[in-house]
Length: 435
Image (cartoon, rainbow, N blue to C red; front, side):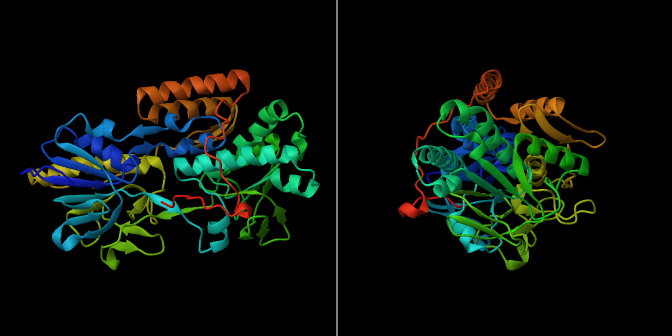
């Protein structure tokens, strides 16, 4: 890997997501060598991926080069690499570009889409965990609209204009709301030969309410907002099969569609090599103690989505969202310093800052400890928080002006088919880049 030899303690971080980046930025100036490994050379701000997929933002607005983090220290290095396995017996990480020995290893590989064993959905559906996947969805939506304008078959047009999303968590709610706004504001202007009333957005949820992780208040408000936008919500409805053309459910509902997006869950993305006792098999996450040490290992840590830390308040682990990942990354930075200095470790204590989701223009819901609110003010808070946590001044500036432009003009400027996505019927292979 061409990493200089050193007498300093070497910390190897696998993954440049929220957790890995939070840790890396906190130990840059410390007296240690840091090596950051990731299969991409950028950090992705995943909460705004849905805006890339619905033409609201370009991908470079929500991506940040990882080398901009490591360049400020001559003791820190980034390597574009895919980690294949870990050999804890000799403190070695194996990658597609070589091996590296560590003193302390931090696994921050995050999560991947969970299909719950449904192969048909994995083969034919769309999902959204990376920038390329978001661009695939954007292209597919726009291509289907283009195709709908020229088809003479009413059944084919109906399938092209049906948009089905499975999973009414924050991603599903935000994505369905954004597609509804695309229909309400963009389609009438860009596609005058299409009837917007023929475009239907269906949101399917296996439980009895939308936004199950949030409060009842947020669920009811979001449900109402989605219906106001024209989204058709189907509760207690689970997808059984999708063959690329027809969505079948556990009810009598069956929908012909050329656009089916799966947003119904995630699971951990572990690395091969650690003992089975280190894993919580059902969750596919590493079992960690209060110091984020992986069960059975003193010098291997896991943070973020891949870590499952059981506490009295969170018996199933912390939620797999950005805030626990960021807080664990920052806290582990302190504990690694303690380890190097021979000091006692401090247990991690998660501070829940609340949950929020946007449904569309002037519409959002926010759950804080004592306050629950919705509407325009919640939407404003949502925008402020997401701008604040975007990495890099340029990203914040570009995103802010994009949002201002979209708000004033009821427009989405990024509706470009840069990388065409071809459907299954055309039998073209497309890498959906499983994470």
